[in-house]
Image 1 (tube, rainbow, N blue to C red):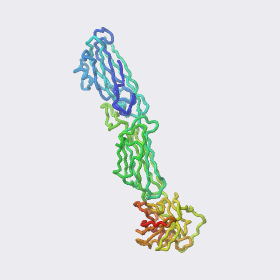
Image 2 (cartoon, rainbow, N blue to C red):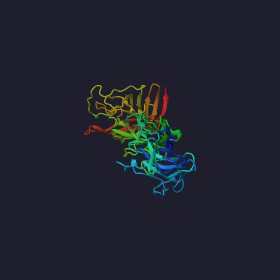
Image 3 (cartoon, one colour):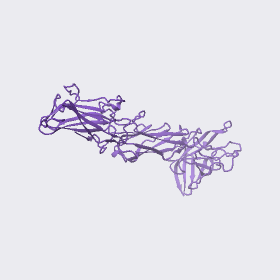
Image 4 (cartoon, one colour):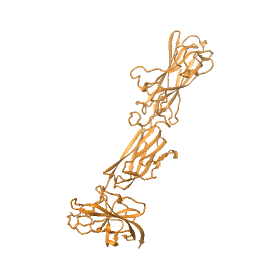
Length: 517
C-alpha cells in the first residue's frame, strides 16, 4: 500500500505548500496479489476491503475523484463496478453502508466544525484478483485545507490511510502516510501618509497609501481591496485617485471613485514581493475642528475568485480565508490612520481697539520673515503704500501683534505674485488707537486696482468682490481656480464688551496685467 500527494487545485503555491481553502488531491494505491498466490493475508480474495483516511485537524474530505483497477481482472461485489465505489450513492449490499461516508470523530470536541469530515471510509466490498499477476487498486480523492483557528502559516498537516480486510476470521490492516502539506499565508501592511499633517482649513492635502506584503508573508494574496472612507470634513478632489507607482495587476487594477466619500482600489491578484503606492487629494473644509482622523483599510483573501462557500459537503470551514472584523479566524485585514492637525482655526486678529492705546511688549510674538523679493502693496483708491512682510503659520495660527505699518503675507497661502490665492492682511487700527493701513478696504469697489510692486515688475489686480465673514470662516484662504488672486483681510466692527472684532472684511482681486520694468 502506498500514498502520496498527486496535486492541488492552485498554481500559485509550489511543492507541498498550501493556502487556506486549497484542495489537495491524494492518491492511495492498494496492491492485490492474484488468487493463485495461495493463502496468507493477500490471497486474491480480499473480503470486506475498506480504506479509511484519518485526516489531521485542519483538513476535511471533499470528494472522491476515482477508484480505478489496474485491469478487468480486479472485481468487486458492490453494485456496479469500481467507478461506482467512488460515489456515496452506491450501497454495499452486504452491510447497507454507502461506498463512501464520513465517520464521526470520537473523543472530546467531536462536534466541533473543525472535526467534521476528518475521517472518511471507502467501502470497496469483497475484492477479487481473478488474474495471475499482481493488480493495483488506485483511489484518488480531494481534501480541503480548512479556514480554522489553528491553521496558520507554517503549520504542517498530514493524514494516515489505513486499509483493512478480513482473512480467515482475522482482521488485517496496512498503513500508508503521505508527506506533510505546509500552510502558507499572505500578510499585508498598510501605511498612510500625507504631504502635510498640520494645515489650515481649506488646504489641499495629497494622501499616499503604501501597501505591500510583510516580511513573514509567504503567499500571494487575492481580491485585495483598499478602501478609504473620508470623514465629512475631507472632500475628495475628483479624478485624483490613482496608483502612483508599483503593482497594478497588469493594468487590471480597478480604481473606483464613484463614491467620493469612500475611495476604493481593487486587485484580483497581489503577488508576494510586490508593493503599490496609491495617491489622491482631498480638501479640508471649515467644519474641521482641532483635528481630523482618516483611516484606510485593506482586506484580502487566500484564494482567487469567490471561495466563501464551503467546498466540502461535510465541513463548513472548507472556505478561503478572508476578512470578517468580528471573527478571530478570518483576519485578513489591515488598517492605518492618519491625524491631520488644524492650524489657524480662525482668521488672524488684524486690529487693536480703536481710539485706545494698547500696550504691547517689545518683540512680542513671531518675528516676520523676509520674502524672496522686496514687495510693496499699493491701493491707490485708499492711498495705501506699505511693504509686505511674511507671517509664519504656527500651531497657534498667525501672530500679528508686532505688525504695524505693513501688510502681512499669511504663510501657507499662495506666495505673492504666483498663481493661487495669496492672503494679505494689515491692521484696521494700530496699537496707539489710530487707523491702520486697511481701515477702509471695505470701501473698495469692483474694478479698483490693487498693485504688488517687485524690483522686476508691477502686478496689477482688480477688485472683484468685497464681503464680510465670521472670524472662524477660513474660506477666504482656500485655493481657487488656478488664476492669481489676492485676498485682503482685516477686522471690522469692534465689540467693547467682547473686546474683540465681530467680523473680518475680505476683498478679493484677480491679476489682470504684469508690467515689467
